[in-house]
Image (cartoon, rainbow, N blue to C red):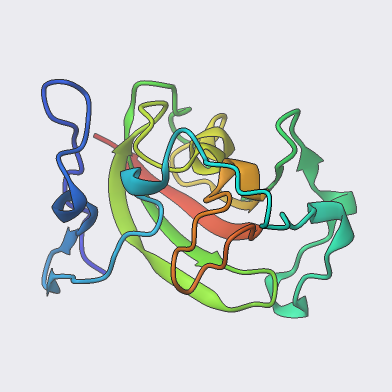
Length: 177
């Protein structure tokens, strides 16, 4: 796996378009894969009354995801987190540029994305659940996130991610730039 490339905002603190959702890893060249936790889905999640949002406590997760809600911490936002490895280095803080590795799944165990990238923690460059879910981690730490639709893509149809979906991520903090 190569090193994550910088994923920085422009002078206004905003990403500059869909082309910024592509990432480059050393030795792998330019990836044409859409970074599914990119800016295009952040912020105000439109509400579509015809879309039923999944409820974390009411769904069955694939066994391969290893989710036991009773062993996880429920945040006030409704998402769940579980530290898999605490890490023994620097505590990340809002305003840090983080290098992360991640894998994302749907509740049925379908992996929709994985890779490495860098982002500004708290900068609105990723879905809200991802931003909230890494707060309190340390470099070297690994955490499982279970994100409700309202903190993910809401009623948006993201192709492989249906509207109203719960998202599951395994995240590792590789470093702080």
